[in-house]
Image 1: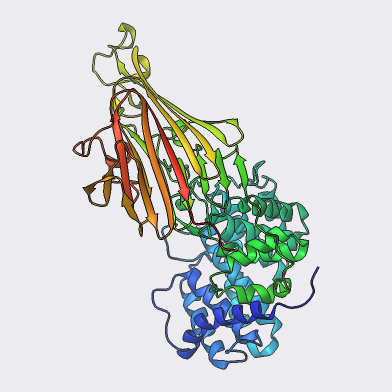
Image 2: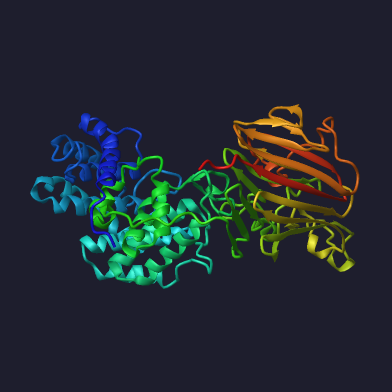
Length: 572
């Protein structure tokens, strides 16, 4: 493994920190109004790192020290008598305070190693950390990743201020087991929380506790994430159970983890991911402190592996499949939590997108299917079955009911029956006690992934209901072959249509195997996305934005859709 330093990486890291810290040092006495406690601690950490780092423009700067003290006074001012920090929607939150204490403890290590010249900073950091210790030692959490962030804070406190009670509490949290599944995904399935919370916390815990099993968990997660990196340099999030399930999340937060493990293990695939994460430059000011705390990050990367194409991956625990070739990168998803829990909720995977397709600059961001069935919302597969290599079937069967009169022995003279949620509606009608007349509706989508895209076969069965297939293309392209219907929307009937960005294009051609002809552009009542009553009852939506192409009709119906990516041949 290489032992030489990566001087360009070191310089880039220093420049990123300086861009953030220089402005703070230029006004060292300026009060940081409106900055939350986590931001205050991160700024202190960056200022101390810049002061310590020989390649930083602020190396040895007294103004950097003064600015750090200004921010530390502001941080101490928002620390409540409990030692937890005020601010944010999570009131008196041990895990939210743990994020801040983690930075405080790292800054303490950096400042203490500098000796007497940073003595005032070191003392202020120790005071803040000490005031928070008791509450973090006994405090609770409310999300899966909080356990590891809080444990990392306790481990950092022990690292600088040894106390066996802190380690005992860490062991109590870790005894629950790290929530990583057989495919290497954490239970929240979130790129945001894996990269910014869980992986860095487990790496710290592995170092402090000597726990190689925690290091192994991080390596497994990073290995799985390799197959979730999209051609635009982002990480797939459609399967997430957190806020990022509707966002495009960049790869750069994974940079220090891919880089560190590539250097320590020699893995060329991780080295390639680290280079890709830094391809647009390094702009994370926190990396400087990380390199000081973990000097291995400054070593040269091993030779990166070349990208292997074609490749495919199916993650049955998340019901997510990806197929990548030189022409197309296609994702199929059938892992929503909504069919089982029958509700939209923070912490559940709710995104109804079931397919994405990348063809260079031409991107089909989302394929969704609405059905007008009791306002229960768009198609979200309850089951995903692998039929063969790169062939999948997604299925959702919806059942609701009309209710008969109550049996005699369940009637009440006062008419005061239980308020019950029957899955789509709540009422004081004691629904479980009533005979039911069920109405069912089933949607099946078969997807055949190809080197140049995908073939879909969509079967909608049950009573006659309107349906609409929505294809949302990333803005910036030209739509041809579909009829404009206003507001960035088009209608597709017999096709074909193309969406072109430069020399890259996605072609869509549809056909009806059974059922009525497709709806024309005058059917605005059909050609629309319906988020379902869980959103509309509160005036909300989870609708996409972009160039949206619709085709629709009245079920029962069976249709096919061929999605083809076309890109110019690579030049030699």
